[in-house]
Length: 181
View 1 (cartoon, rainbow, N blue to C red):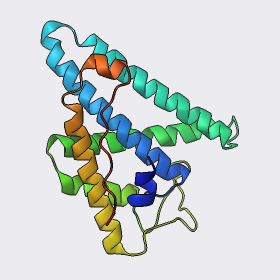
View 2 (view 1 turned 180 degrees about the vertical axis):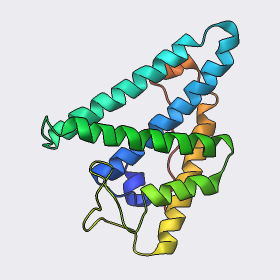
View 3 (view 1 turned 90 degrees about the horizontal axis):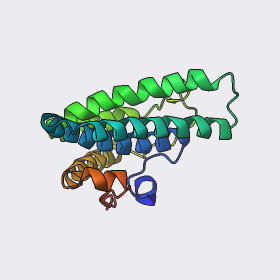
């Protein structure tokens, strides 16, 4: 959605796009883990776990294809995929904890560090990005990180009423991101 890049100032770069894909997959995985835990009592948790696995496989297949489209060599792709995997699972662990505790501040810190940092590092290479686009001032950066944290909590809440059948069918009620004022 353009609102993430134009309104919330997420850098419209491969790294910024990775962060938005990762956030939305993490939100879906969070919901699927809740469903699997609820269904475990009835031995019906397999479908939620299967969808979680499918979602992760699809995301990493898409990342692999995107790297190749960007011109990353066949030799370099596995190393970059490992870096993306580490980055994704690190973010997922921190995000799940913050979501479980409705911790806007923890989400804001996570987003500030990985999306709105004054010095950005590439999740693809682990190196500092030269000339990375950053918000014009620190207070704007923090405000955008807070707005994105609010969005993540609203998205998590919107997913609470979503059924497993809805998710398997691709019907996901993503809220509209707040525009900056």
